[in-house]
Length: 459
Picture: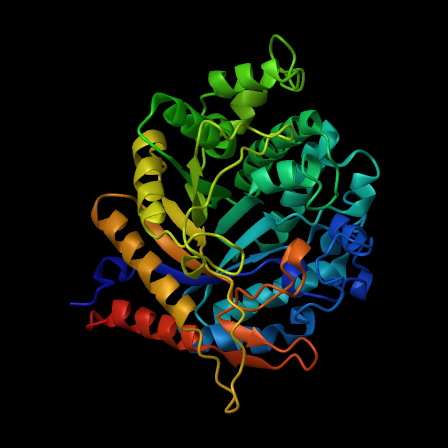
């Protein structure tokens, strides 16, 4: 029996990408600028001084990339839609050529037997909306719902699966408290407003998609940090609860109709980042909208956080965490390789939130392995990483977690946000000068695992 027998059909095996990281063509066919275009052009923001103007040139090479997916044997593709390609100003007239691109992409997926999973927001807010207040402004949540309706009405006859927001924690805190992501702001109080408006936009867009596409399956992709205490002390247990609260419960509790967690409300009030009573940004009815029924929860998992009581939360609301793993047990991002955390996350989400379904919408590792003299990329560490995590998914599914699919991050080496092109997550190596694609050994291993799961062969 295959080691991946629990992941046999109808389990979905897929790959994931995002628009700004791979598309390029940032000024082609009427696309407007996004906050990441603006952010990347400012000196010092991107580690290698690069930008996403070309990236993987997927906008022009999408058929080649779909052929790679067909070769891999994946049954699903999670991609994101660039808001400024569809609505260059965030609102107003539709840019038909931009929407046509996604129309062709969806048709190309279906022609190859690949189910499209469309993500509506993977951080590329139209700059025109940022100029009017961005996610700090409540109106942006309403604009997002209108954008979602535009896309759903065009693609909803063929796209069943929709992800509203990708990792709102990153957009809120890395973008507005820490300054590491676009739009590069550093205001912890503002980040809480942004987090709320992102969640509100999820609820509003879920309602808009469901009205436009009867039968649509809709969810949100959450960046899950598996938190563990550094010791058995009560103080470390409390630190762990705070770490879990800041990364997980602050987003998942309201998503599942529980409102914001009281311990975190008290914490942010004590820091002076929230009003002494109810948060000013929460209006009547907001929590009901945020808690609108979803069909699944997307889980993005990369590593764990170990909480210690003497590592107090930083002023920007980013709880400090320690990584005690040796260097050889970390990826090029410095993240500990900890597959057990993925199984624990799937079981915890099942137990505490009872989602109708779970998808691992991102999981992968950055390693810099490049082609050898024969043009092969021997990335044994990534191959081992994926296998170990897939086995944990299989174990969680066998234990009762309603996990329906797994998307490897990522199909291609790409523009890795503030790290530029210095970090490579892809199953496929990309030469960013020639745009040549080379499937790595990990791609061959992933292809073999998919085949084994489907055939029930020994993996």
